[in-house]
Image (cartoon, rainbow over all chains, first blue to last red; front, side, top):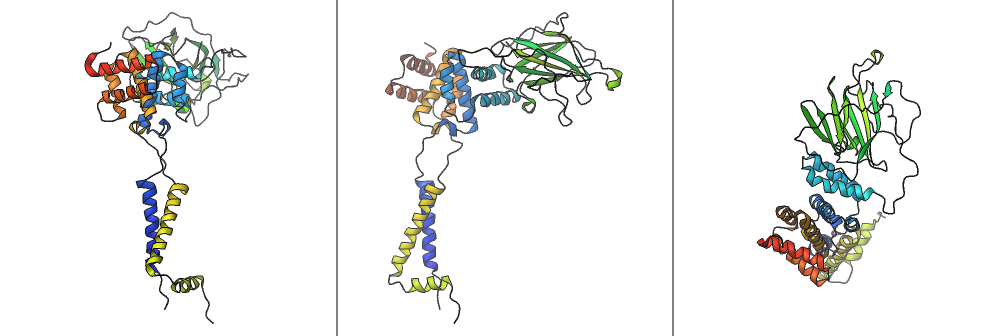
Length: 281
Length: 130
């Protein structure tokens, strides 16, 4: 009777196991361990140190060279890390170098050419999506205004002075100007919602920009980028009806006399929402 | 005539090979070893992920310490520098700076870079900033 060669099969399997053990555990191939392979916590520490060094010496090329050790897109990674730190409640002083480096990496390398076409002063918002109550402004300008929205002039009413407790954080590399102001009577949007988009001079969203909302007897600081699903430069707050607010973006000039806008009866809403777009100059 | 399978052919062949059983086992072991090595080195080699900072090559570790020293020069915040150095491992923070200094001197870093590392090392020794 023919006998199955179990002993040889066992020897073959033992040889395979020995080979795997040797090559995977005992003598794995020697590779250069680069920062690209770092675990997330150490990678964030490295990014933070690179940003801190850049804040110290202002050497963008050196920072760029250091970031080139990582295969991922540096600007997006820095911005995402800044958002995570903001969400974790880390002090803004720790986050600011990351935001600044991300912003400076996004700038064109000198000699910078001015944009071919100036930014549109007023960019209409897109019609609201039924699934998303708030969507960022579109890149293309839609010529016709929405029937339920009302374009207003930028208010120049008296300023509400910020409370003394607030120390304005320096702007992220420039001043922000209001480039679009809209009031919306849209049932899809929460009444009293203040939506803010902050972009750089090239129209790219800027995360981590502090926004100071001041009203009589109170104030609130919030930041762009905490709702990345709505855009890295997006932030929002809820305005109470019949209360005046002042909004300051990145320590720039405050926009005063903001309030939840009244809506016409046919809209079915008593109060609407406000959408503002700021652009860094 | 009953059907003959491949297995039957193989079994009859190896049972008639004029080789001692021990040599056959050794041969199978070596073949297995070769298969295992080929698979582990060529087909599915070890992939490194989630590497700690301490495992990086010396030049990368030095650059990390260098960046800390640059930041320290402006911030003068020693606890923060120590927190950052702690990512390199459990040893005394000074040892990492000294290691970076040795590397920097051996690889002819610029004098100002070496000076920054020395300033950080001095602060960690308790000498404060120069």
